[in-house]
Image (cartoon, rainbow, N blue to C red; front, top):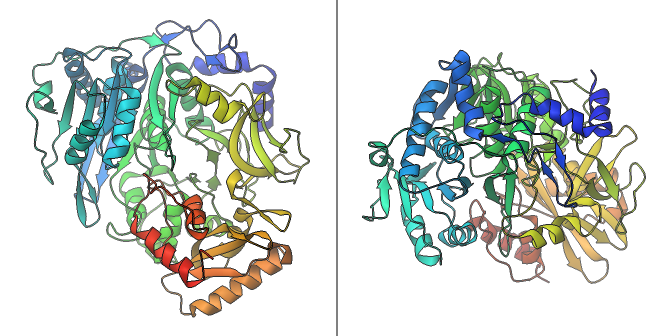
Length: 629
């Protein structure tokens, strides 16, 4: 069947479509129906079925005779080691840790916080919690103590599983002091912690509260899988908001596994036994969906990478990993490829490696500018697929579904809506907009399986944050348009659409133009306050490492380029060259924080920022241009 046929069938009869998809995973009690809509606009999928996430990700493959198949490859340029774990070995490791948690009183429904770097033990901890029906909440390793404390108080874990440290280029980040400080700050105190000691920095243990990863498992009986209802919370993942209380996105077990399992074949064109690499972190939603549960449930080998796209040791690291482990599909953030392109703009290092196993590259997490996509297409010679999704949805809202049909690629578009997503462009009043017109991107309810059914202990906040502005729709917070062919274009966060003398303009469109300049490695555009025009666009440009032109020449050329491509209406005159852009650890540019600095407003240091020093550099660059005015 074609994509159009499959999308139409899911829209016309979602019950039949999703019940068929549910048949591809294992249930102890199959669901009697797909959608429960009695409490609309709160919906649940496969609510009365029973299953276990760990059984689907691990045990069923062993029972099917695939115990010797590789489940996890851990490649760590930080330690110079590679570890390979079969499904049978993973089953044993997970059952042992789950047994230890059971013996210490963790039961189905209890919360377990996981605070670990990119090591296989992070996946073992997630799966062990899932095995006994506990609800895990992974917090990015090395997150500030205050942010970890907020999450401890919100989800009240019975246990915290942590590593002693994480590794960054040139430094060791000790996690245990941060964990100790977080527990000290929090009102809720976990019953105990389990600490995986790494030789790079062993942690001091608090007797009676802290237990060694290996020692706590020595006398434990391996735990069996505990079936839970389809609407049982599988995990809580806190969105990385820059202000206020973080939102705990909940994922229900049944819909989560059904949706992810469907995407592995239909979107990513994978087959069981092949190697899938999501170059992300277990602390982000990509890590949950496509480092852990998606690939393992489908029977693929998942690659856990502890390193960076550049600097561990060079811009050829990704190519080395693909060659060494025969990666078929790579999924990463555009910012990773911009970093590689900046260091090796001609792609010279690619020729040193055999990339014949690679069949596709998927990008998500930040807008994929056309220049980056075209560079990757040219250098790698495989389909480069921009796809769009959110922490809240758990998988792609829009994509090019390679496993169904390799659709025409339109550079700058994440292609088309996936089955189950009825994506529409609305004006401020909630009215549909014509093709090609910029508006708010909303998704008609109900959302498909695997998306968030609510927020943890915050139903009213869920309703007000996502479902109130446009009744009957989920508000994505993104702005964009749909063309005559149904292709979606994500132009900016709604907050990044600026108003210049009455004209609504997308900063994303300007970024696309700036990124097309041959000397610009990456860029950001923000709207700064202007007494005359309301807002004015301001560009921040990072140069390629081999650029020979003067900064002033590049700026002048960029100003001219925006005028030519977008027109005088953009009023683009302000730009500066910076060494780096402030980003979250997942690669999102902190445009909102940059706006506050430019406008002289107070701002809270974002908890997710990769390097706070960059904000000082941005402040200096703005000051040199007279901002705040």
